[in-house]
Image 1 (spheres, one colour):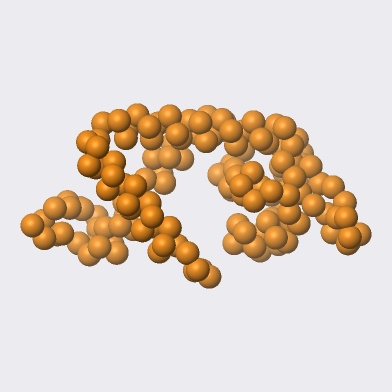
Image 2 (spheres, one colour):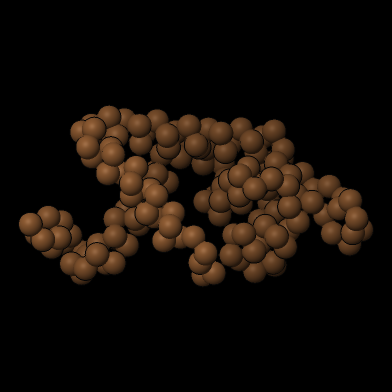
Amino acid sequence: MNYAKRVHSPYGDGSLAGDLSLAVVRFARRLRGRRENKLVSLTQLSALSTLHHEGPMTPGALAAAERVRPPSMTRVIASLSDLGMIKREPHPTDGRQAIVTLAPAGMEVVTEELAARKAWLSDRLRELTPDERDTLRDTVLILNKVLADTED
């Protein structure tokens, strides 16, 4: 059976690239829909998640990691600081810079978000056959390979 017959994609273009892109967008939307804490925006949550996964960093490094311009990240950092989600500390070697770290409140938001997404996804995965779950494990490896070493 060929790929086009196996996948029904009313809004995709029938190609692997189009159908995969659409599926990833829909998947991300579903995960975002599991949000527990609406106090922070998705942009703020993304910055908090980066700090959670990457550790403390300068605002410039955070902007680069989030692929936004530094002035935009300055606003995000200021709003998260006002909410008590992050802390800004002096840079140990460069007095002109600061280091941004997660505050306990920020860590709690990230932990709650991750738990809600994991619970939803675990429920969906339990509905699949063992072979389908194995296929998804392989898919994760392939997606990580596709995403590796990309500059954009």
